[in-house]
Length: 238
Ligand SMILES: NC(=O)c1ccc[n+]([C@@H]2O[C@H](COP(=O)([O-])OP(=O)(O)OC[C@H]3O[C@@H](n4cnc5c(N)ncnc54)[C@H](OP(=O)(O)O)[C@@H]3O)[C@@H](O)[C@H]2O)c1
Image (cartoon, rainbow, N blue to C red):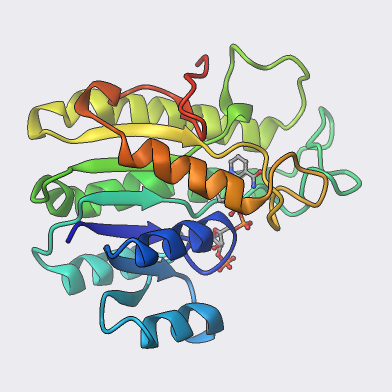
């Protein structure tokens, strides 16, 4: 039975992906900041005969990552799926949510970088041995087309955009540095999706995005290391 560890598993795309892996019979480690408050996740875990377990992981809290690493011990993780992310205090479709020039909130920008860039790096550094000990050896972070420098035709979104461009660079380096350990690392764009973050005007419903991403993830091979793919499997410009 392959295994997946998912961060941000309590809602949005993380929860959608988690349900697909549970239904597919994987061993699932569902991680979130407050497992005790994650009502739907807890109900799923209770009904799962132990195939879904819940764990605390707040990517802004190093101690929680260290505790997770200790709790996992040498358990292999076929797919480390880093979904936890943060757009900023206001979502894109809210008034003032476009993070325009002249409106920067630097404290919030630092938090965005902490969660979206340092978070994936910390999770990867903590759990790379578990990934390398597995069969599939896959390490994927949900990035965004908004992080594509080549695809930036509208400007704005300085904080979120820079965080996703940075995590793309991080994942590209990982794809090179971890190759000799057999690890396939890459960033994956889910599409613009109607979640709390994507907002109600987004293009896609969550099911379309998570089913598409699962198909792409199921089909990954080592040759995909360091590619920037979207939920349809299409390659995006850096
Ligand atoms: N939705 C889109 O249109 C879209 C487009 C492109 C990329 N993405 C990316 O896809 C990922 C998931 O997005 P989403 O739409 O599902 O977002 P969402 O609905 O806002 O959910 C965000 C998730 O991240 C978790 N999270 C936030 N800060 C965290 C922290 N410090 N430590 C651990 N978990 C934390 C949240 O947990 P809490 O419940 O505890 O806050 C929640 O589970 C993100 O990386 C996002 O940037 C989304």
